[in-house]
Amino acid sequence: MKSINYEHAAQRRTFVGVVYSRGSKEIKETILDSLDDRFSKLHREGRIHIHDLEAYGQTYNCLTPNILQSFPFESFKNYSDFRKTFELFNYYKSIIVGLGNEQSGGIGIANFDEEVEILYTKLNIAKKDENLQFLRECIDSFLKWINEARDRCGQVQYYVTLNLGLATGEISRFVTSSVLTCFKVSDYIRPNIIFKLKNGINHRKEDKNYDLFQLAMDCTCKKMIPTYFLSDSSHNLTVDPFKIALMGCRSKVYQNLHGEDTTIGRANIVYNTINLPRIALEINKENSSLSKNEKVRLFKINWEEIAEVVKDLLFDRFYKTCELDVDDLTCNLQNNLMIKDLSKVDSLEEVFKNGTLSIGFIGLSETIELLTGEKFFASEENHEIAIDIVRTMKETIDNYRKKYNMNFSLLGTSGEFISGRFPSVDKKFFSHPLIDKEFYTNSFHVDVDSLLNPFDKLKYEGPFHKFSNGGCISYVEFQSAPLNNVEAISELIEFAIKSDVNYLGFNFPMDFCKDCGTTGTFDNCGKCGSTNILRIRRVSGYLEDADFFTPGKKAEVAHRKPNI
Image (cartoon, rainbow, N blue to C red):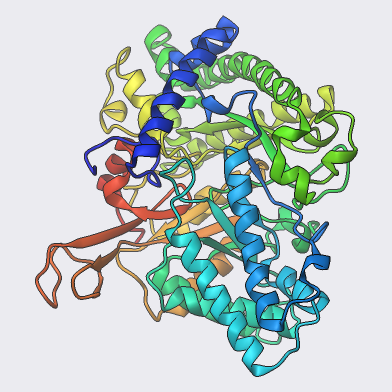
């Protein structure tokens, strides 16, 4: 099974999964054949990627559900405190399963700690020691279920992200502590957990939740999770941190032209990604004698031409999705999870217009090298060229936003599948060492083998975050787990905030001996000599078994070097 090339690392081979995958492949081809040639041609030629193609016109992408809006308190009224707690997490599971079956992307909980406390209080569960102990056990069981359940499409884990860290109530703090502690001492690699960092709440020693921040960093040292939403970066200072949340894959839904600026109850509806290196490869082939400034100017023109088509494609998909009946979104309809009650709208457009339409990009690093002959971190001039390109893309998308009164955004795409797909297609038309390495670098990241020290990496990537309002992340790669080195994590978080980073994660190889349980970084277990090793690495925001990575991500991991 490990030799099979899956489209993402969360897949495993099952009978139901095989049936789904074969059907999905046929549906994708049928949809491509039905699209306007302008759209299908760009996808087939590898100039763009239409994500979740089998879901085109059938559903939206990802959602941060409003759990509190219509929680069924009445059905809990005759339960004991223990059963109320137990059924509370059963409700969360039912929402995750329901959404997993009616949308194509992930599920984010915006303030898991605060939300559980509100529910716990409104359910009148007594704050007794035995009840709190049972709450912790239910939290651990919930994490275990998310980690192990591979029910979606008969083969895939649910993409769940828990955002937490801000709420200061007694139960909220207990929830955050329980999540982090249970995750730290377990072998879980899911869900993704995001710690929201904010001055006055958890960032400074005098803040009430500073101890939870310390616990979060200790967990990160051992497990790579949690990652960090940096509320004190300059472009996040005007954002209410309780009203924003991220998906583990980096999606960010916040600004809203049609209602309140919030993530809660809102979705990313549709998104596509543009292959930046492809544009640069074509410029070099057809205009090799041009100066780098002329190449950059031509690149912007050619990107905008593709973006115009992608914009039309997003509209086509958006309006086809709006033609669905509200009954097609059963979980949302029954539980009232979106920003507007589906049972009270005349059409889904009233709801979906509150969501985002994202244009993504991948391979900025390769693009700058192709256009200038050097890495974008090789000189301040090249760095400014790279920033200028991303700024220009953002300006174009902002113009779409104003012109069409729709929530367009720019996404720094993670590119698990397309990191390998794009160069494999480009290889048919071009020959270049940047293609031969078999993957393109995520979004605006510096090369994974740059060997930059972590501070320089964050310094070079930081300026791109404010432009990538549809979501982005920066990572620091360690040679091995920092284990108890909380000081190193803290120092890098502080530098990331100063560098205007929006969302930050830490990577390191994490190996686990399946025979004796030893963890570390090794080919053979140093304790028992076993070669039966589970190798966990981060891919596209989530931790996964490296044996199941897509070809592009396997190539990327092979090239990864620590930031030292």
